Image 1 (tube, rainbow, N blue to C red):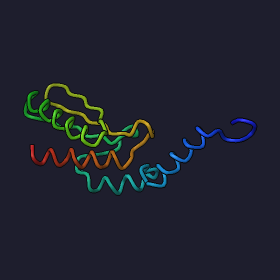
Image 2 (cartoon, rainbow, N blue to C red):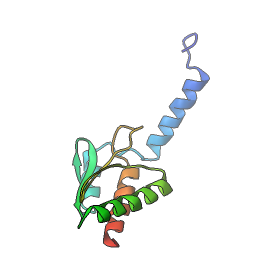
Image 3 (cartoon, rainbow, N blue to C red):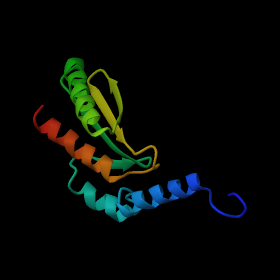
Image 4 (cartoon, helix red, strand yellow):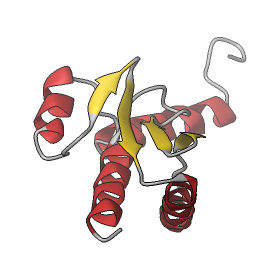
Length: 119
């Protein structure tokens, strides 16, 4: 604030945040997330993130799948938290700059499920 008014930079930031919210990127209500989960086989909310764990035949299959997820994630510029231990892949999806689950996470979860169908 300068002389009791909002500075130009702050004003632009506020407008951007309002636009982001108006575009419904943020899924603030649990009901919205729960509704989407009905269409996302294998996903659940854990620690405020979309979560899924997948067991593959072996490490090579698990790592191959992670590579596919990485390529698809890069296309939409939304990157998951990926963890692997031998043949187990754990995926967490959250929009870090928002601090919650957004439609971007839902979109990526659908892409990941599609990759699994064709794996």
